[in-house]
Length: 327
Image 1 (cartoon, rainbow, N blue to C red):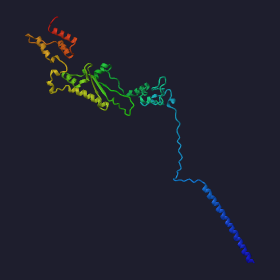
Image 2 (image 1 turned 180 degrees about the vertical axis):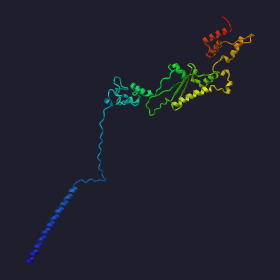
Image 3 (image 1 turned 30 degrees about the vertical axis):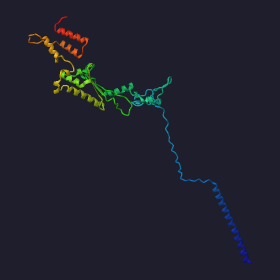
Image 4 (image 1 turned 90 degrees about the vertical axis):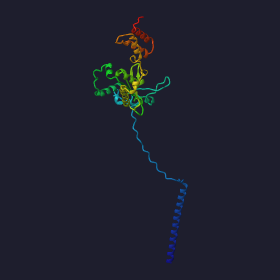
């Protein structure tokens, strides 16, 4: 009897544990199916490449824009400290209402702000009277007193007969050298040079068109060298070489005839012998009579300057005087 009761209790316990296990399995399977259904309902994203996370942009802090210098400039501002040298136009530094540019009739010209016309041309804002006065005071200590004996123009021209001319250009280019700034012109009067008859004739032939007969001025212009100093030295070399070469007598110069002479000279021509022959015709005196200097001058003017009313009248007067003929 006791054994039967024991078997019955064991059978009930096994039955109750099986039912509990079956309920747990069913509960677990139900939750798993519900989770699978929820996963299927969501939209899945297909990532073909990895997306990098964008870095956060760095914020740049900008300083506050300062007002233009003209609004902060004092009335007694030292202008040489603002505009000390040549430079392009800057509207924020010039306290002047400058205007430039073409407009229609009746309209105001463009102001100085964003004005390309003001930046094109060279300005002379650095050459104000106070700036020039300040620069002169700075270089005064390097200057020497004016030499005595050169107070007038006639005095210093007598001691310094050569005049040198050159030009400086103010321009806005990448290079500071202007192509025309290298040109040098040297002028002097021919009367300041000492010549004899042969040297003067040869010198005039050497210089050619550089000598102006109307003004008597000799001019040398040089611009073939790259710098002004080189052109100045070359001009002095030309003047020196032509001057010393004019005193050299070559062997072939002795064969020069009267037709090769640049001017007619009475003393070297047949006219002198003809005039002396007329004056000394049928004369037994040992000392021959020569033609007067005034007659020689009239003949030279007539041939060199050409026939005109004055030269013909002068020549006629001298001929009558030489032959002692009264009209």
